[in-house]
Length: 85
Length: 541
Image (cartoon, rainbow over all chains, first blue to last red; front, top):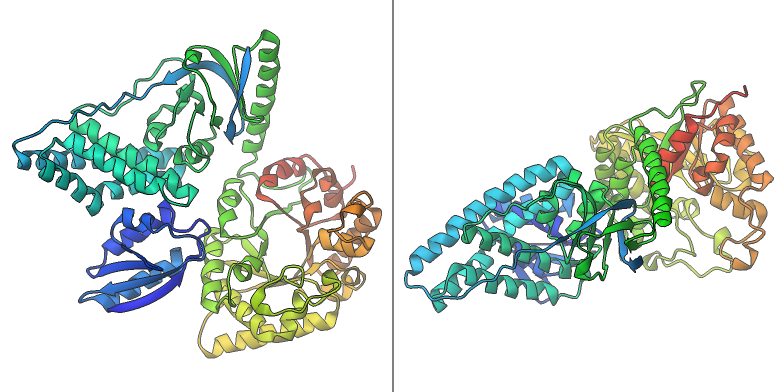
């Protein structure tokens, strides 16, 4: 399992557009991808889960990647998040 | 005649007949079924059809409102493919042995409730998206088309609320304005109306008998006037014509050069305070960014932003501007804009205190981190860097020495960078007086008129008692600007204005005649100022 953290830079938080982009990216991963915000968690491949976390600007989100290709998938997601969210 | 109030989503005036848009009530009947498998197949088939409808809508929206506006239909597709949503529909069919339409309706209510219960206004508005996709799915299940009927003559459309797909499906040439009873300014429909430039009001509490009546949508004052008198109508027709003309003239300014009648080109740039300003920078056709305030990077964090974090933000702006110049101002904070982790002492007189470049030249590590991020960004476009609060040549020499150190560090680790123009803010009387010496050191000056006025007139901007004597057109300030321009031009240094005076249309011609090279203004001033500049001369005729 690979774990990393990021802080949401987008001023509107994970609203529809960035949430959609993130789900699209997570779908590319073979590993399971879980987002955690405090005690809440959600499957990054499900848009309702991601939006349901109600992620706001400045929130710290933990990402848990688990599967055979977890190293690669985590890197892919990390790059994507740094660039877009 | 009577008028109703509403909240403006997009300003503008429309006059026409109201047509009430009644959603076909999706009365969903619940009935039990025997063949669960075939019911599940129906859902699957309908899902496929709905998704292909959404793809078509996405294409249509892409042309009409561009990628960011069209994105919602891609998100709708994702919602329809969300495994939890689909599982819920299937489970209700399996467990209760009920028809697919009913199962979708129940699922829609549950998911919409989840959004409605969230503590965030934006997310609450997403309940409408869930209902939108579910209704679409139910319509397909019932074997009907989702097409909307259209009247022949252009109308003012009144609805309880409009879903994004309803908004995009409409033939825009037939819609003069939207009014809705509900909906929020954050709804996608509101966003789409703004992007399409259609006058729109929300929260208008109308009665259904307005259907077919003539009305005026006054998006400027947030009013709907029903059955207007002839003289009111006449007044609004004149106003509408004026608005149209103004809009047309301004739109004609897009893509045009900013050049005086006698052929002097002026750089017309935009000020931004963060990445979120970029859409309006692009839609108003700015020729560059003249002031990118980098403070927000520091203000919104609880620790120093790293080189990587800064680099990502700068790079996204520079790449968006695609080769046009982006001038980033280095950190400009002080005791009046407190940032906890900087641990700055409270000061008696923060405006004249430990701030801006004074902090950067003292805590060089912070400064270097920012400069490194900026130089790395310069490999991706046209970057300029400017330094605030300069009072001496020594400061500029110190800055340049640090810049050289940063460059050589980047060389050592093999990171490439581009050509960067270096400039300073002229915002202290001292900088004005030694502008000739300073001009020898840098590529450009940017005059910060707000601080320059405060320091020159010795008037604290925060002190409301002094508002009546704070004169931004004071001859001392205008003389100073002229001195700065003349001194700079002796040494081929170009000069811009990025303070509020730059956006003051009453002074544009004066600045042009003084020989200003650049004006950096808020995005919504770009087109009006371009129009003005194209109508004035640089030389006296």
